[in-house]
Image (cartoon, rainbow, N blue to C red):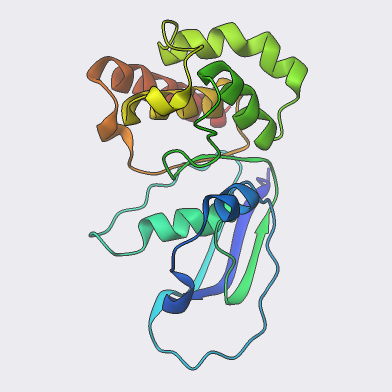
Length: 206
């Protein structure tokens, strides 16, 4: 049986000039995009972050990116998530993308943790009713029961990660993108996150 294509890169290139600072608004606007159009423009540059990349990911695939610092792993993930659009080539996405890439992306630090659960969930395309139904489970998994009504501006980076990861993985995602961010979480949460990731991987092959 042929597997469904979830993501396809066709000769995708991203040039160095595109790798510049983006405002929080830009990240929020683009990070959950599910399709990107080819840019047709001539750029007189030779430094490519991504250069002529083609790949196809199918339903149930589990893909890990390896490489030295600066190899472009995070940039590729951001391109998959829609933060960056390619300068050349075409990207096609079939399915809802859920991501934990840029720590704090989509977070409103003036809102409480609970309010941000709704905010992050809505940005990922989940309905408010389903978020409210899952709210207790999300909070329990995050381990933030004592801080969930506090504004996120008082959270540590580890607490922000726990909040984002809990929302992104409570619903079975069609496409889940995660950067190497778990160093900021505590050991107990890292163990819980690893267990959840293993369950998601196991379920994806069913």
